[in-house]
Image (cartoon, rainbow, N blue to C red):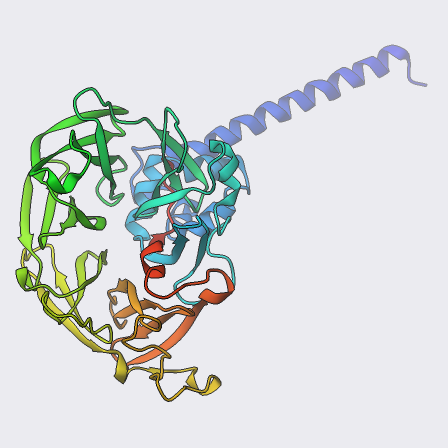
Length: 430
C-alpha cells in the first residue's frame, strides 16, 4: 500500500516532468523560429516551409498566419517579405470602386470571381476607428497599399496608410504649415521590390488656387524618419488633371497644360514631358501603370473639337528604358463584341456593349492591364450599368461587375464622382 510520502514523491516527479517537457517545447519553438528569421542563412539552408510559403500568394499567407506563432512571426519578418516579393511579384488582384460623392466603396476581383477579394470588401470595419465623417476616402493605390483620408475630420493625423489585405494601417501626421499653408495632391511612393520603405509626397503652396501658382513646392514624408521634409526642388504649378502615379522610382502627374511632371523621390529631380498629343489636345481618359510600364489613354479628337468621340481611343506606353511615348493600341469599341451579348437584347441605337458616344451611355477606361508572357492586354471600362473587361487581342468583352446593384450612375457628372483603384495583395505592414 502506497504511503502519503510515496504519493507526494510521485506528484513531485510528475510536476517536474511536466515542467521539463514545457521547457523542452519552448526550446524547440525557439529552434524552429530561428531558421525562419536568420538573415545569415542562404536560400539553400532555409527550411522547406520558408521556401514554400515564400512562393504562395499573399492572400494565402495571410490565412496561414493563424496556424502557429512561428508562421505569424514569419509573415512580418523583413527577410521573408523580401523573399516573398522576389518569388511572388505583385500583380493587380482586384479593383476598388469608390463613389466619392456618397463615399460608398466596393471591391471585386479583376477576373470577375464571386468570392470576396478582400477580407472587408468595403473597408467599413475601419470607419469607426477614425471618428465620424463617413467612410474612408481613397486617394491612391500603390503596390499593395492604399493612401486614404477621412473627409470632414480635423485630425492631428489625417492621412491613413492601409494594407487592405491584412487590414493593418498607420496614421500619417499632417505636413507642417509654417511655410506653405495650402497642401494638395497627396501621393504615395512604394515599391517593395527595391525597398520596404515608403514615402508620401504632397504639393505645397501659399496660393489657395494652385492654377494661379507658376511654381509649386514638394514636401516628402519618409517612413525612415517619420517626418516631413521640404524638397529643394520646385515643380511646375497649375491644376492637376489626373491623380498621381508612382512608376520607375518617380511620382508622375499631369497638368492642365498637357505636361507630364515627373518627380524622382530619391534624387529629387524634376522632369517634364509632353502628352502624346502635345498641345493639340485630345481628351485624356486614363493615366496609370502596369507591369513596369506607364500608360496613358486619350481620344483622337483635337482640343478645338466640340465633339468627344468616346468610342475611339488610343493607348500609349512609356517603358523604363525609353523616355518617349509609343502607340500601343488603337481601340474601336464598335468592333468589340460582348461574349454575353446573347443574354441581353441590344437596342438598335446601341452597339454590342450597350454603350455609345452619347454621354448617357458612354464608357470610360478605368484600368489598363498590360499582359504578361502568354497573356493579352486588357482594358477595363466603366459604364452606367456595369464594368466590363475588353480583351484587345481578340476584341471580346465580358462583364465583371454590375454597377446598378451597388452604385447608381447618372449621365454627365456621374463619371466625375466614380474613382477606380487597382490594387495588389501584399504582406507589407505600414
